[in-house]
Length: 292
View 1 (tube, rainbow, N blue to C red):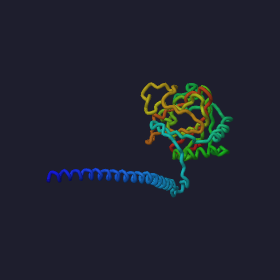
View 2 (view 1 turned 90 degrees about the vertical axis):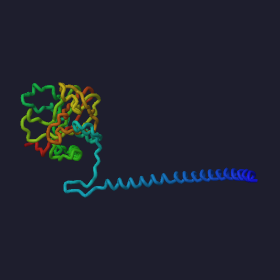
View 3 (view 1 turned 30 degrees about the vertical axis):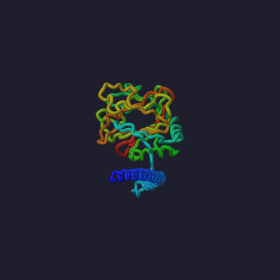
């Protein structure tokens, strides 16, 4: 009897267990389906919420702050790319419009003269002939009745955070085919040029035209390359920046400690096709009056 009872129990328990397992499986499958549908419906709402919060936060970040007497009430955005840290060089795409560039060229082209050089001790005009072969003229923002140079000068001051009163007049230059400027420093080494009452801290080049071929601004000592070799100053090598209409190039001739940055050596490669127009703004380390 005990044996028969045990066998009967097994026959009754196994089907029940099987049925219960099936029920639990189906219930679990159904529940997981519901959860997955809920998850699909919830996620887009969370993303939308995060997006709205991000936008609100962004708007809050860009609200103008209270400013000082010499500050401004608006927020400006001037896009730039760091081209190099040695020397410190920044590229500003679309710094001026094509119409603004044309207006600057129109003012300058009737006043062009052969470009000159600041001579080092022992140098003569004859001995430096061929070093700088462009033609150019100087125009101050106050002389420009169109207001274009005033606008550009103000924008340069914002980009550099150097006062307008520290800048020299714009040097508007034209390079024709074959013309160039051999590698040089914009800062004046007192050992070569004699005592200096102020120093050129930075240079801003506004490219007024495209150049079909050649005419790049070059930095042969970028990242200290070639600096300890017998570099030939007429060679066009190193970091090269191709001129593009309306774009700007800023580089610093002095290090933060006030000494000349040896890697700021630069030049203009020969134009091989077309012509190159550029407006150069040299910025001093203090207020500058070129008429004194």
